Image 1 (tube, rainbow, N blue to C red):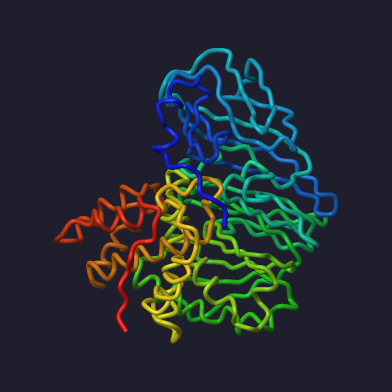
Image 2: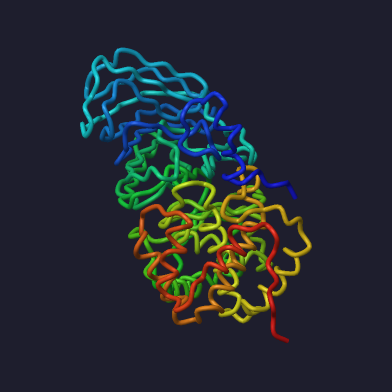
Amino acid sequence: MRKASASSGERNSGKDKRAKAGPPVIDPYLPGVGNFGYRVSRYELELDYKVAINRLAGTATLTAVTLASLKSFSLDLSAALTVSRVTVNGKRPAGFRHTADKLNVTLPAALPPGAAMTVVIRYSGSPKPLKTLWGEVGFEELTEGVLVAGQPNGASSWFPCDDHPSAKASYRIQISVESPYLVLANGELVSKRVRAGQTTWTYELHEPTSTYLVTLQIGMYELVRMSKSPVPMQAVLPARLRRNLDVDFGRQPQMMKLFTKLFGPYPLSSGYTVVITDDTLEIPLEAQGISIFGANHCDGSQDSERLIAHELAHQWFGNSVTVRHWRDIWLHEGFACYAEWLWSEHGGGLSAADLARRYYRKLSDAPADLLLADPGPKDMFDDRVYKRGALTLHVLRNTIGDEKFFALLQDWTTRYRHSTAVTDDFTGLAAKYSSASLHWLWDAWLFSRPVPELEFGP
């Protein structure tokens, strides 16, 4: 496993402070991503996509408000796309420049703090994934269709945006594609129009959502509605995989019932959709209201059930309650991993205690160089973040008891619903559910690298 980067305290040594200051950054895990001076409240995308030649043409309309006096501003947008026109509040700016995955716009006169700003951008090109520390992310061509996997900074591969998890907005996504293809985006399908061999699909997503959770899925798919679920559920998949759907994904309604009981109401009005591509995917991927799986996860073996539970749990932990800074990624992955254990316990598999024992042994045998509360950008998706995060929650559950633990989780998902949070928010809230100090637990599991000693019963 890769060695974690230095902790924030080590990074901010006296020597670093004396060094020449570089450009300001919003998040040191992705220093070139995110933008200052404004807040976007809504994106409206009007897109046209040609599958055979991978050609995207679009107009993005961003509704925003200035946070300071603003003479210029930037947006994240892949250099693979070309911007042909920009307007701000109906007028052309003094100038714009698109370079190094940034669209920089200069205004003819400064806007005051609190000013409304409507930015319209016309662009086109052949989108492709961004190359990152974590591999290729973003807009990806499939054998026949498209998959968008945005985590952590892939949204800018297909539309101009403020691509940081702390920047949440609502969306309207309209896209025209050749009619044989099914198109899925986030939210509710509000319109579907067919004309001259083209179908225009329009989706509306009302809930505030981080850009990396916005997705586009295009393929030769059929739609299957899943019954007996407390929340509307559907699957989008190739016809050839339909025979395996009930085998591999048939227990999703029971998962939804359990998670709404334990975590609180499902956070989205549009229901939940799983997309199963015709291609193999190494790991499934979460999006707002949607999870994306590969054909290898729908092979009739039932081997992917823990992953199915994991992705569903992200709708609460990660998609609704989202980290404000990527260093707190354990608030996504540790919680979703622990949801796997809770489902196993409920569904007739190993108990959470058995799984905690198993993964504690594995974690103890792994290098003890990861700080859960700040793992460093290279290790933010390391499996130890997932398992140590889940173990932290299991220790907390054993410490405060089931009644208080699950009350805490529901308080957490309610208090920070469709918002952002940091580790201190969770530890502060947890303190209200414990009669004794929990500092020892956080110090050992979140803020120290060695794996703490943990006693298990027989």
